[in-house]
Length: 455
Image (cartoon, rainbow, N blue to C red):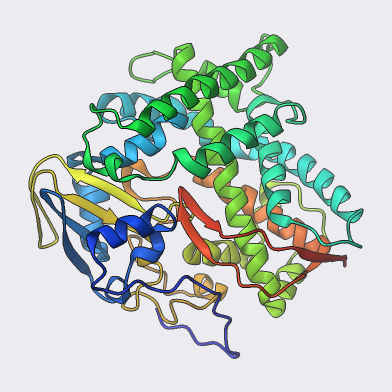
């Protein structure tokens, strides 16, 4: 995509790129701290990079046609890697993001009605109520530096709680955040044996993950039990995602979710719904603090209106472009790794049984053959008539396994950014560069402080 820009766009900081000749064990050492720092310049220039991963070949795919084949045309041939399963199963169980085959098909069909545009529109009042409260709290802090990353985490967690259960997260929020922080700090990082051994052979970290999972599922079950005590009036419309998920039935089999399955689905939606959105909003606020002119364009788009409906959200075209460009530069899921069940040919790439396929949105979104000024923050590229190739831009994945909650996340992100920037002018309180880390999601290496002033 060729983008003409009147002024020089900002280029936010990134970690230094690895030497292309870095050894395998050197990459493994860096991997645990920051996976995106393991990729060298070749990964941003070449369409396919072939390597070795123990007994099998590995491929980094930056070629949209090959990615289309893996994620869409022959997606059933590709499954999660042992390391990927180890990273996700303790927190997501056998939920939608982990399930394969018939189990995944059943879950996807069953959950689909809960995530239609109409269902999302019915949840917007929950979002606006939390945004009103967040803006009121920030109003009282305009005289002091503010940690907006923590604010976004609390806000999106509150939205996740209310849209899922119709109750606030004042009592349970700290516990849930502690679970997320505990897992991300140690258990959610890949270790050498996690990558080497098959899933059926537990690693030392797997025992710690199992203990975590027991405590985590008990906590989610507690939330569900509390919600069920609130009940649901006969004939009343669904008031939240839990109503929709609890009543959901597979249209082909008529089966719903067991209590254990419901725990995994709720855990998946809460974690995916709050952590990734909070991270995306943090990066958007950081970019707008670096780029005051673009920040003013976002503020002017709201026209000072109180946005509180899907129609209002749909009108925020430039704000949506800012969110899309933010997720290009900082994709929440920075890597998709798959293992081939059988040999295959993906747009000319010969793949053997057991070979590892890596599709890294971090690389794809910054690839020098796919994007003009790939490292620059240029939201208007997403308002151009020349849209990016569908398989060159994957903030929510693609194909049958595309994120089911994408419409919800997009609506929440656009509404939140428009309301926050419409209310406040933000700037960084210090100039220490914020470096992205690839650990579970694309996280900042530290939480910078911001100054906010009322518009």
